[in-house]
Length: 214
Image (cartoon, rainbow, N blue to C red; front, top):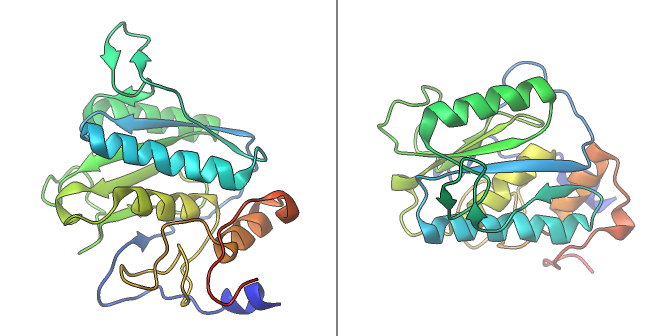
């Protein structure tokens, strides 16, 4: 099958890195129905909206088999007006959420940082964003390295990793470097990987068409 052959061509090392995907320790795969997401308040309003749009794209693709919880703007539990209801203020609060999610096994925290902030010692050289692996609970986006690149596409790519997709050397959302082989939609190759890892019904997923696929 085409998608199986594609999985054998991973580009884990690339001279012009767009995203980085790192596995730390043993990776375990769980099959959640609902995944809550919290977004760093240090993102700008435009960046936050683009991240929300990325979550919505994945919800459309997953078609209810997994629901990434996306809440609208409003007043948070602390009474403060928030751009995004599930937002957190800075590193310390985000780390607390990450620990909670590690204990419960569910949830993602999306951090904003700068390449020289020293908040995350593990930030790879030249990476725009990274996650630690499947079923981990942290996504880090390095704002000052984006250089005008679409944060929505970057977020969609990293969510692919969190759900079980690897880099592929073919036009796809999961192509590892930014350029004309990278797609801004969730394609069949990406969803094939996620469906296999998550044991989803592929026939009821929604994907965009890329060259080479019917």
